[in-house]
Length: 325
Ligand SMILES: [Zn+2]
Image 1 (tube, rainbow, N blue to C red):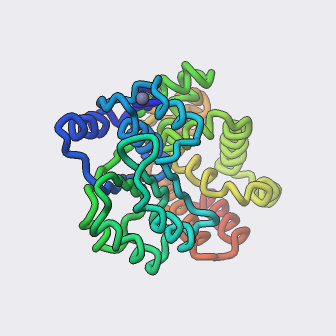
Image 2 (cartoon, rainbow, N blue to C red):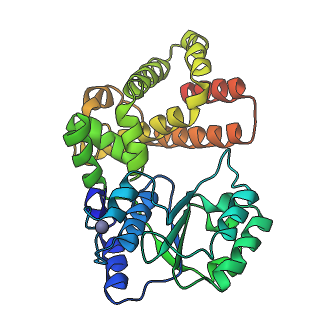
């Protein structure tokens, strides 16, 4: 793998290449951005480049270093990641105890610490000492989706590299070309994951995701038509899918936002549920005020469940409200 396998992040990659070209490579980087948007992929390609014997701005993919990197047995490369949301201090201690041993295969040693916000304070302080005076051949890349949990003294030692969500049309192209999704499905997933490439691929591979959307929308349609009995019958569905409640509520939020849009401009490329215009049309009898109230109730429900309000009660209240508002 190398930079060419990465979707999006062109500017970030260009900047990294420029620092290599100019010889301004930093000892410590912090790759920061939302979860699953490609930070780790870029970090790996960057690490491979820094280790490559050809010393270019891209890995040559032919030298011993590149081959070993691809086979996960490069002696000068270490990847540390959390287990159960914790990076144990002993892992960092072990890393630091070897840091003064010169590189074997390459001119550098590269260390990636993924989800580095899962280091406890004590562990971060241990690492900080090395960041303050690193051996000249060391490059450390910290990756995080939550830099609030990283101590300021570490942040100030790192060159911060920001990552932004991948453009939706790029994700769509990939989902259609590589994962066999239809244009409409790809459009829905790309919006649903807000530009997270990793999540988009997971949803594309899931055989249940579109079924979940269909069932959710079907139930809501019946409830909106005033079938009160259905609220209690449909609780089976919501209970069975309790683990997916965030997805279900997001599906609903996107649906009602689409409904407002559909009422204003009709069928359009701006719709997220482009394959569901018949159902949108059937529900366009709802007044905009009522739709806005429903959206508010859904957001309230999500907050309540996150605050540990009884799940069943929260969902039932939401469904009853949908019917009444
Ligand atoms: Zn190489």
